[in-house]
Amino acid sequence: MRCAPSRVRSQCGALGSGPGVCTGGNLPLLWVQPGESGGRREHRARGFALSVGVTRHALLAGWGRGSGCTATAAQRRRRLAGCRHQTTTPSMPWAEPGLRRKRRAAAPRRLVPRGFSMAAVFADLNVPGAPERKSLQSLLEAAAHLGYSTVAINHVIDFKEKKQEIVKPISPSELFPSLPIVQGKSKPIKIVTRLTLVVSDPSHCNVLRSTSTNIRLYDIIAVFPETEKLFHVACTNLDVDLICVNVTEKLPFYFRRSSVNMAIDRGVYFELLYTPAIKDSTMRRYTISNALSLMQICKGKNIIISSAAERPLELRGPYDVANLGLLFGLSESDAKAAISTNCRAVLLHGETRKTAFGVVYTKKTHRASEEEGVLPVRKKAKTEV
Amino acid sequence: MVRFKHRYLLCEIVSEDPRCRQCVDERAVGAAAKDAVARTHGDYGLACCSIAFTVKYLNAYTGIVLLRCRKDFYRLLCSALPFITYLENRNQRYSCFFNTLHVGGTIRTCQKFLVQYNRKQLLLLLHNCTSEEERQSIQKSLLSCCLKEVEEEQSQSGDEEDDTAETD
Image (cartoon, rainbow over all chains, first blue to last red; front, side, top):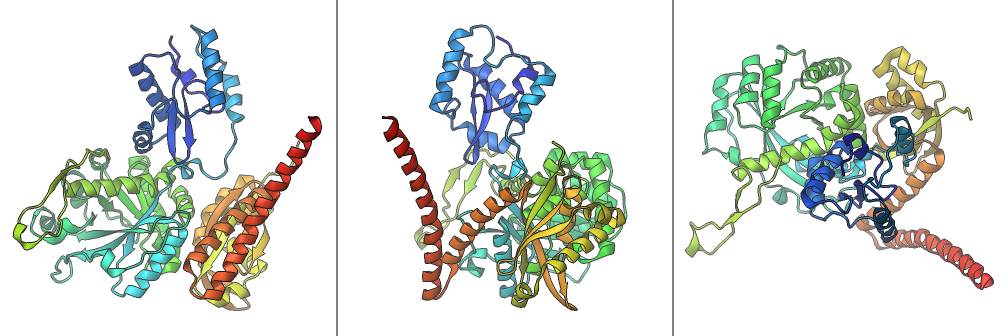
């Protein structure tokens, strides 16, 4: 029994038959046509889900729940009854392409973007670390009120100024004993640490290769290249998670497709800031022009948008930031991904650096002084970024 | 049926200044939104968005605003709202920003969303409140809005039971 691929991509869920994706709760659950052999049905269902737009993270997360258990009892009965009569035809009758479009239109239309109703975790990966605790606390409270689940506190190291040392990152649990709870969820906001290196000379990159400095303790490492050569080096060789794109002045160099494609293959993301655009009109023009030139080369992949908000009034909610992404030339789904799934991918990328590509995970536990040098080693399943 | 379709944007005005909430009114909010659209999208954007642009609902205590515009041009308005940085009222500026909560096609859907949102806000307030009397007043309001729902459900199920009893 073969279904044409176009037939598989039909309306999902409402008829209760055929392979479909149903968002039961937060994770997409799949059900498949009974009566097919195991491997082929999983392959087809996975392909169907990916064509519908379920992200790979969600697919991996929801697959374990098992197929075939999401439909209600009535739907299951109907499906089994249908299959008993039809032996050779698929349970979804073949429809002409024109009719198929009408049937899809009968599904309930949503005006709130669809991507936000599934596991919607928003992150703001650039919050400048102010020296005073109170301003940082108010920033965090504003971010939690707006709905951000993860915030990265940024320390900028500029090598042009006199020699600066890379300090150990302050652990967020020491700074803030009680973290505000994220609006709409019941967990407190999560804080990660981030380091940004402003490089204008190739010798500045040596700091990334040395293993003895405190760089290893940061969760995310970003680099801000100022020349074209450094941009190319950052895309191809450097061990970073983010490459910052300059938004405050006209780009001194053009992006090259080769470097950008290599960065996309490696899993390095490009970062755009939006706070300068809100503050000043000329910065807004530079931001939009730089963003559009980047967009033309990378076609909207591997982009994250973050604020560099110093005051809580400069933060914007995730829905507004996604609309800003539309202004920057992203498509709607890319703009939504730029603040949710891509940020999560950056966090995972940073984690793999700590854990040797996500295979081995070591954790230091405080033991008595007798067992000082022994660290327990735990194996962690390989996480796909 | 030919009718004009609109989009209703439900926004929340977030501000640090406590005086901002009391001095905000519909004209100031409308002027700020139009000004932002003009700055972002120019004369064309301003002309498109002001076809059926009104401020339908404004709650000064919670800072909730409901804006209306035509469905064809709502993207211009949506993308210009993050650029609002202050509200001006009687030559006094209050810095604030707009946080978009929901985009709906009718006022009723926005109202449904707003009711749920306010319930969640009440729960958050309950979590954060400090003094005892505040806590009790919030608990009373929470109970009243939740009990009302339960009462409605009970009355509905009571009607159904009556119907089934009659048919029996």
